[in-house]
Length: 107
Length: 116
Image 1 (tube, rainbow over the protein chains, first blue to last red):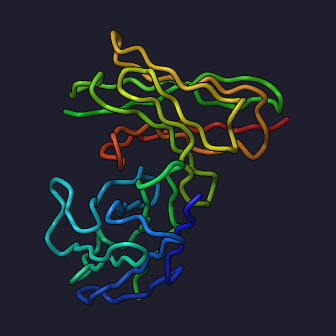
Image 2 (cartoon, chains in turn brown, red; image 1 turned 45 degrees about the horizontal axis):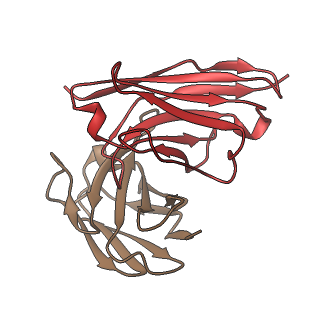
């Protein structure tokens, strides 16, 4: 199974600042990488697929990059709605696996 | 609009069974793979199982293999998860999600608590 490791576990950021989240795969997943946002008490929501393609209705301040084993999610200017937990997930192999999540909190 | 609604969660004793359902609407259900993903209280996401669009292929996480069975009824736009021999570690919110690769759309989840 492919192990996905996210860092940091918690990121403290002030509104309006940039947040950079990392995700590493234990073996290459090509560009078969998705990012999800989960707000408290809500279901996850797809943000990014194909490592860098924004899902429908996702604001341009969210961007993804990377390939093979190293990936990054960048939120260019944090809004109040963006304080949440973010998960990466690989879909190159079965079983599908998620990172443990990065919590973005208000500084 | 596109929607998934789970039902069937509740409190169940260890070793017992429970059946979850997911009702889909707003999209062509029969063309999409369907998944169950779970989240233990305060923990991260764990993929559980997938059933391909036509029901002919099913894949399970090792943690549930042999105990859980995923199925679908394309005539009724419904997805099911039959859970047998439940354990305390199966306690989680269970989400159904659609997608042939990643998970495009998620339901709001249904809570399963395994406790005596």
